[in-house]
Image (cartoon, rainbow, N blue to C red; front, side):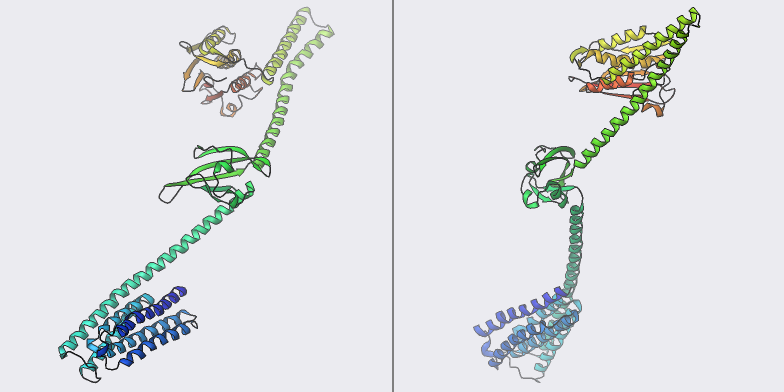
Length: 532
């Protein structure tokens, strides 16, 4: 506020010099009406005194410090200007003077430099001095010669018209000045708010731990925050004007917006992982003006992920070992008990035969556990060949119809019309279908329906095994693909785990849905077309 007032007071001094130079000096140089002056030398003294006052004003201005002092100084200048204008009018003919328009200049100056009140004060003082001068001229208190005879009515009308003009100028310039001051103040406040917001935004961007950069429409980097410099070990000067592909080689030129991408870049000669998301940069009107990218150094995150995977691996191995030990312990215990009783030879032949059958059965059970576990754990090569999916499913259905698990009241329905060729290992995929099918048949062993059908999508085929059996509880549905997890009295609990492993090795996905106990179960296998 104080700086603005200083500028306006300074401007008033300079404008006064310009006006004096242009108007009065031209009047003096071109001598328009100069010969009518009663005392021509007074005009020279008058012009010199105005220049001298300007020097005085400039010296006084340097000593002012507070706003009240500048305000009083501005009022003093305007009052002296009005007095000088009155003197000029007196010297140039009073009522005949062409310099009566100088008063409105002072009125307007008061509005620009000060406020509306100053405009009205200046208009009042101008009216009083002008009216007093013309009254003194009219009643010949002061001697001012004129070329034309003016009546008393001419004097009063001239005074009235000038009074009206001065107050109109004062009123209008005062209102305009007030609006100008308010608008200026409002703009300043907005500038302050905008500057604060810009600074705040800059502080936020510079304080963020993620690297942030912006580009123009040609994908050339404009800004690069502190975190970006720390991550890449590049300064703003190093990246300014270069394209994003030059700095981040893993980004393609047609990188779609809002898509996360990961890659590696060099830092001090060593590569490190970076995760990045690029979005469109828009202005206030929503027009795209470039791109904004946010990226992070994934070195620590990748290390943590590797550590988590390592711990999960060992935890899984431990859990799997415990499950294997549990599964092996039961048949071994039965086998040991049968052999010990046979060794004592204290049992009847019939009982001995029964114990032998138990021993053989438990051996078969052990062999089944080991076989299934090896099938699950051992990496298997995929003999990928085109095969008829529907034909493979029909073969599985035929085996299910003849299986011992299928009860008399179990109905197996299919929708497998025609042929549907896909690429994969037909034997392994048939193992998946068999495991899912036997699981569904076991779920409705007391009576129920099993539906097996396929749905073809754009780039994939979906194989559905649906039953209306007892369903799976919410607590168990997340565990059905865990090795050795089973709710059956018989079985190793590896069937669904093997099915999931084979499906994923073929690039597919397997999922399970169940509304809960008593609401049936649906298994879905999504398999990509044209891929192995």
